[in-house]
Length: 380
Image 1 (cartoon, one colour):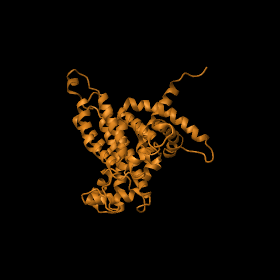
Image 2: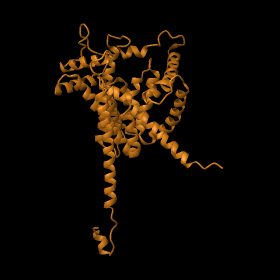
Image 3: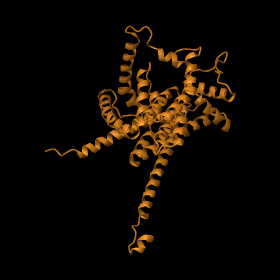
Image 4: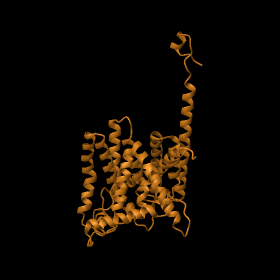
């Protein structure tokens, strides 16, 4: 053991902390090795489950052709007579595909590999953030559930924008939660948030979440600059979608948003309220248990209601922990959920970008419940 200079002069040896530091570093390395293994499993499974071709689900073919248009320095629908300017999907994901194709060629496997790597990067950032804000054990648990989640694996292996949106949103939330706050972290959070909103239009909820949290933290200057930048970029795109000449349900989010509110007997407010109630029931009783997924028994609904109750209990307890430790993520989940409740139709696919946060909330709730159970007094 090496003696500390000051301690030697007073005739004692300083405490040896080198072994403790080495043990901590070794434990941290083991945690990252385990995380890398889980992310590797995610990459392998997603690649094995990848789409064998451009499918008939419509979105992938549209994205592929929009990427080709971006490479030609325009954003026109090459698949539509007259090639009008596209107004449904934001240009972020087609631009991402165009960049990868410029570097590696226009091949389906190149597009799929880009999405899978984006999904893997999202899981890595998610793990690092949860590890810093909570613990390594909780981070590994959430990562393990997310890495083998069927919905995340399926979407990672398709030509879809969810994986890119997920990595950008997780990056934005991680940067916004970084302490101490620096100009670099604020810039990264703002940049990733705007990029996410230009990847999927639902990213406006992320813009709202980051702005609300910064205002709540009295970061007025950063919030104002961010609001102006988002208005010029995301706002400009949304303005075009509203003014675009093609407003067809299924091909226009503006037309979709107005779906179901026209001709309602109880007016727009009543229609929206009934829609929200129906959507909340659908997501709570069907969609969330399907995408997590919970084990169910075929031919009965008892198990569905059991998982609904468990989700509500654990979700309430876990949401409190998320609010306390990762507030911007909690606000994002709330804004995103509000939009899903008001949207004219439901889909399991809409939940995919929220799955890591759902799993984290459930695990936080389970951990909090276990602590309360252990702390409860023994029965007489």
